[in-house]
Length: 101
Image (cartoon, rainbow, N blue to C red; front, top):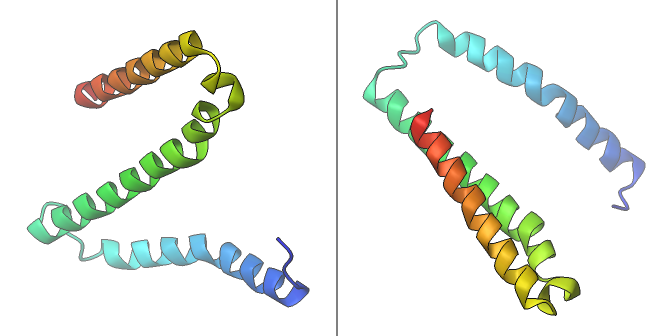
């Protein structure tokens, strides 16, 4: 990206501040946070689902799509079938792991 020096410096500062700020907020909230309350469980569920949605989007759009839309893949039917089979096998095994864990 073609950012000017000021923009790059500001973004680097915000990046460096984010983790310590999050840790500080977490320490502050831990004194009166009840992890078994209904509100905490709902918030945790929402944050987990947003995180999972971002991971699924990144996997499907940025990683898998580049491989499945390549010229090599579109010209070889055997490679397509094998790739889809291994994709679904991997997804099934990850689902099994999620149920088990």
